[in-house]
Length: 321
Image: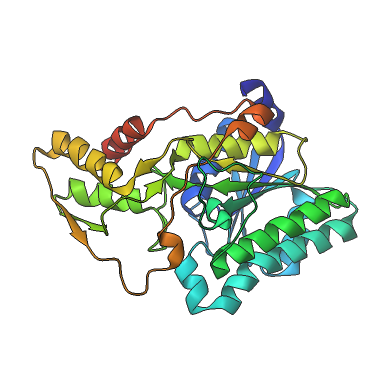
């Protein structure tokens, strides 16, 4: 994997959503790989030595014309990240997810260049699955507008790759956790981060239902490495990969691990109180998921290095500083 990442040295790399949770961590890692980083954000970013900032709206064609002309590799992480935002404003969710893809393809066609793009998708595109772990051969079955829009974007990118317009890889992210420069603002994202902060603040946690649903928590450093590998390779255009730990844990067990490790730091054990699921909870919340990551391992020699207990420990250590 380290040999592969040497391909990023000297490359001009753009990151949309650079101010976000994963984007901010990715830009730091790219700089360590000696890439020339262009941070793309709708809002103004605090200046960062060695990085170029572009303040632009990803839903405009001019933004993508600029990025295609500048960058060898584009990591596209911007857009809606919440299923509940998509429910409240489906048009905005559709636009923020698909308009950038349309404009990217148009910009690439007009430029005559073949940009490489790594797209941040989601493992929830599989919907409610019965057989675990879930491989990429499992047919996707989106049951939310958010996931449907993500799947449309994946398909558009795959088609454009097939036609030779660009080289895309879509990464289907499981439950990402761990410290970053910026936290997700979406209420349905970063749950493990939020309960970790609460436990350190000695606040009791609320666990919906009996906590029996299974999640696959993957540490942010491992996620960033998956992005780096996908961007560094010129293979697998049009493919999509699971980015996960490959290990399942119930919500109840994950909360328990947070509480036990936080107690070692604060000296006080907080409670975990069961509460009914909200009446407006989306059906996708009632899912079990474990991602099969063998395809990603085979493609890039990538493997998850941080176990859940270690990841929680690392996260709490950062949060309590």
